[in-house]
Image (cartoon, rainbow, N blue to C red; front, side, top):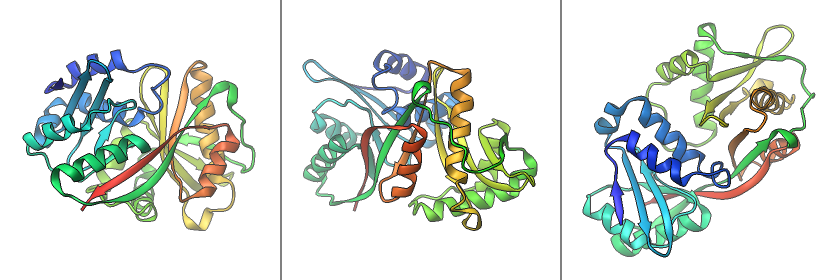
Length: 284
């Protein structure tokens, strides 16, 4: 059975029965999408955001989310009945640009979608999702300076950094209005800056609260002229430590690009532990 939700509140109620300590980290992306939907229910209808729950008698339950024009996102676990999901999406005349999922789930859906629609696919980014708990944290001390919450004085430079971050990350879909996005993140106090003893901005990251216990870090960026000084590792360690000191039983998580061994090594040295392999797959 596949149930489509028009209300993010009702979807959240169902999601809360699915999510647990064992799978909350690997499902941080669906959780982030759902949080976005809860902030503005009207946006769900304007953008045609998809929220599905698939239940099977023998194969368990899974969720699928899509925020056009972005890829379909599948939960972990997901029942091994991708034909029913594909049929539902075809019936709804949904254009599916691609899928983001744990590696085995992503390829199973992609092959099913190819069989149903004759759409070829190609592999995009391969990623690792990491988790950090307080007991595993190893504070970094490589780069002198301090973290602080960004403010509107940082707006212009942070906007430039967001644009460059998306270029460096080779993102297919770029932020349409980076100036406005940064303004909103500053208002929400989600952007943190590492500055040196001269109050010079050295790098930034975003910390997004996922639930009562956890947060996700993304948009970790150091400008070219300030790299190879330990800024990223110090910044991520400090932001993670500050969160876990206030939430000692909580967790931090983040995605890394497997093509960047430096970032993977940095996070592991801080204490982040690998939880799962993910893929982005695009349909042609």
